[in-house]
Length: 295
Length: 298
Image 1 (cartoon, one colour):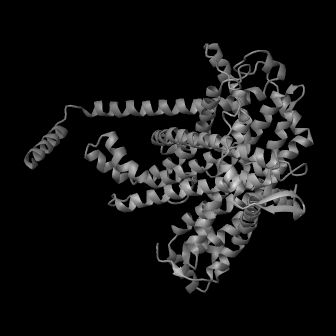
Image 2 (cartoon, chains in turn brown, green):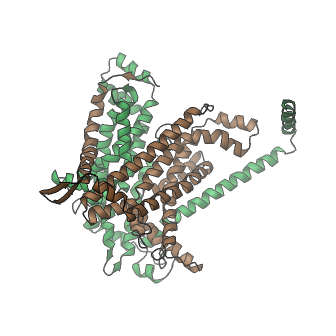
């Protein structure tokens, strides 16, 4: 399938898409770059500031704290969601009406608007009317997400696991379905243990989808906004204020154009850089390894 | 060393062939492990459904019952919250607005993504790899970054507070996603099909519409599902680009909290109603969705 024809007229096919994406990506991005190096005081009063905003943003303590929170959040949810997603994919039924039913049920959280996800969990965890909040209180646990930073963190992680593990599970499920039945038959003849089947047949086949899963989950968790905003509003204090929320507060709430633009660019570059490093590392690792049978 | 290895292997084979485990016991064992898998899956599904169940439960109660006592299911079943939403145009217009910009976005995206994905899957051209990478970087752009510039851009071209503004803004991440998925599906169609069609005298547009698109229709269905999903769930941009005429339902929901407290019943009912379109859409593509999640690449 790799015999692509060199043909520069293909640009004509790409052109409409390019115009649209340029309109919604390049123009706004240039505006951001423009603001990031200027101090806008009024319609006709702007000064060139160079890298001043970037320096002040990088040295801002509140933002550094938000950045660390963001990194730990992404790492925590990846550490939970990836293994859990694989596990669920392994026990999902493969055929029949049960398979369809389970598929539809499992994708459900992915199709709920993000602010509604926040609302669902806000209701669910309230001490007076929420099942989980009320249940924990009945059990004698002092659980309060508006007062206790630890509780807020646990709840946000739990909410994200609830919300996004289905994506990992679905990716792995589709990876598992592409394994030919003959592999399993061969394993049965060899009397391979379940672990051996997983380690030497299923996991190698899952590498590709897992790369996609980790990338998507990292990117989305790094941009998380609506869910924690609705659930905790970033509190208590700033315990659950993540980068997107800091940015929107700065850009829309305080109208600090220059600093927020500089912050935006740094934010965007960090995501790009991490994704790129992860992707190239994985690709190199795969190239160095001798090819698995059919993987 | 090798001798011993061989010996143990032979020994194991011996054990396997003359295993003391009877077939019945073996069947028993697999049945037990299947039972355990089903149990774990069921447990996960129950835990997963619980928050949604709670929302549905609340949407079927009156506010006094919600606040008054802890009830695991509605004692006095009421549909007033839903009736309230369906009879108030400021409420149900939110759903219509959301639907409108989602459908617009799906149409625009699929129209420009189909030819582009075809170009990426069939041809090499100057800068193709860079272009593809640049497209993917748009998937990684936090919407928060684009808030302010979008607001200014759409305001200055007079599109602020229109459905098309939100639809165009969502193209930022939906077009790259669509191209990524479609490219995977298209690459699994053999090139010989194209060549045969050209030999048979098909022009490119006719071939593309009459032959190629029907061949990848499951891929298109799955792509549309993803476009729906990401446009439907996004709120930050949709909220920023609208004021009153095109306000999405997610924004209208915030109206339930007033000075006199939160109208929990209505909030829950509105939330339940935002889940339903997703269920319908996923039902239509359930048979292809697994492949779609791997972006057509398994």
